[in-house]
Image (cartoon, rainbow, N blue to C red):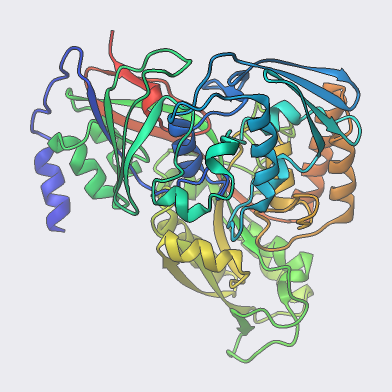
Amino acid sequence: MVLLRTIAGLAVLALAPAVAGAQSLTTAVGTPVTSLDPHFHNQAPNNAMGDVIFDALVQTDEKVRLRPGLAESWRAISDSVWEFKLRPNVTFHNGKPFTADDVAFSIARVPQVVNSPGSFSGFVRAIQRVEVVDPLTVRMHMGGPYPLLPTDLFSVRMLNRETHEGATTEDFNAGRAAIGTGPYRLRSYRPGERVEVERNDNWWGPRQPWQNVTIRFISSDPARTAALLSGDVDFIDQVPTSDVEKLRQNPRVQISEVTGLRVIFLALDRSRDGATPFVTDADGKPLATNPLNDRRVREALSIAIDRPSIASRVMEGMAVPSGQFLPEGSFGHVPGLGAPRPDPARARALLAEAGYPRGFRITLHGPNDRYVNDARIIQAVGQMWTRIGVQTAVEAMPWSTYVGRSSKQDFSAFLWGWGSNSGEASNPLRALTATYDATRGWGASNRARYSNPEHDRLFAESLRTLDDPKREALFQQATRVAMEDIGIIPLHIQKNVWAMRRGLAHVARVDEIGRPQDISPAP
């Protein structure tokens, strides 16, 4: 309560004005990175940091449209071979030249990273062989037509064979191996606290305005806002929904926002036929079977949720209710597949039909410091489930604990978020609802172990389809199968909101990542 009063007082203070030609920038982000190894954990904070220190062959703009990165151009020279022409005269931070051999090394390393809580292996799985034609030309041989390779490769950051051969994730976190070709080079990393970088004056891209950048990790929403208002930081991400309008009215602050690509959803344990750990009968006694395997139960849980109320009240208008992965206008969005209408009466009838007329007990888990209002969302859902007879306990925990437990299938029902950084449905279809298969790189984030053969058949066919309209139709069919089977329970699409002191300009990205290269002094 003291901290909240402090924030209210800071709101009337004048922030320090922007200094022309300023060389230093301090940002605060709500979620710490879990590693500086760019191949370790496929999550937005790590990917944003990856873009600061490293580069990929392909980049994306703020609308996640593909553009050249370390590759100046690419083309399919046959149905099963892609050729990439590399940018000349690129060097790593330690002076080593970037060549086609480094591309081959980087792609081979991705599936070898151990203990990854969110693997990047799915992005390279289709590559059967990497051919080094010359130092600036590489060809990737696929098993057949594969239209998604350029889209996949913007998630794979390039390393140097000589520097990184044998380097472990611990070597990256210690700073010894955190050497890329990116716009900034690492100065220091204090896990859970901050990353400090300095401008790479030899970067191949446009010269960055900041000589030094400090990226602080401030998980507390009030503390992050307070840091901005006090002038301790220049820029924050994950602006608390309760602070948006207040900051919008502050003449010393400006807001940057865009409807994003992150869907917030619930996952239900499908890995067990027998008892699932956090479900009992209505009297608290163990159940012999997992009720979440019954589609009627899953539908009841879905339609018990009042998504518009969550979007308007819990998210305070900073979300759009959803019944699928992607917002309207995205490649693979299914027209007409809206958010399910809340229907508590039908939900109770479905539970009775499934053999649970008195409902059952369940614990709903979620993080309390990862997604916007994550702990409040699961509290709201828990109340809605309890109203239909599913007595729901809610347990929220820090992301650092939560991510490991959810990856081990510890939970029965849990909240998750997924940012489709490719801007198309192939990304969530492969990661979230494709049957888990490490050899194919499918289901890397399918922590509930959902599986549907028809979904997988349609998705596999989409990966062989070069014709864009036909591929999109297959994405839409696979999405509809997963949603009608309630493979996940989508809740809403987040709006991405940043705040900064006046005198800065920011490029708002739909993939929600905030990077120093997207921030500049206002013209």
